[in-house]
Length: 158
Image (cartoon, rainbow, N blue to C red; front, side, top):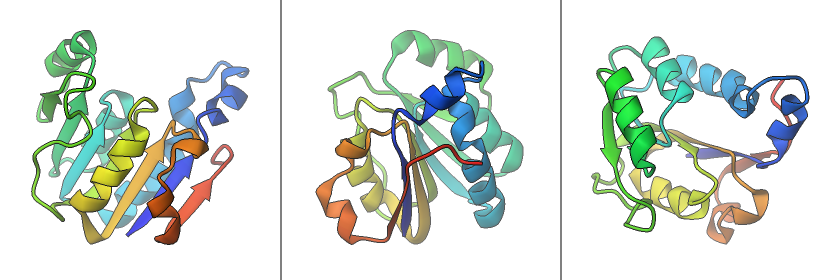
């Protein structure tokens, strides 16, 4: 298992150039979606990344977890073919009910619960799977993860 994490503030470099923060991780996410061709994907925080997953992995089973009710409703109406789960903040958001070692790729785009999501992701990811955590303050990466196979990405992906 490999985990890629980015500092939360990496997007500030791009914001000054009128690009949304998400764009800093498109190259890495695209590379891993093409390389792994995952059949089962879990994502915390649906949106643009979900659309990219659908585009590059049209036959994948995609589960996206959202904690904001308004955003959930909006995404549920616009993202067809994605299993979008609403789990309110502080209500087991980071510990959904999925089988262990079920997913090939997990994408975390949630700074608020990043620490807990990474710990849960380690339980849900297959042994040869990939976890990508975007929008994560480096200080929030769980201590236990530092002893596993993790590569810290601390700048903008070129």
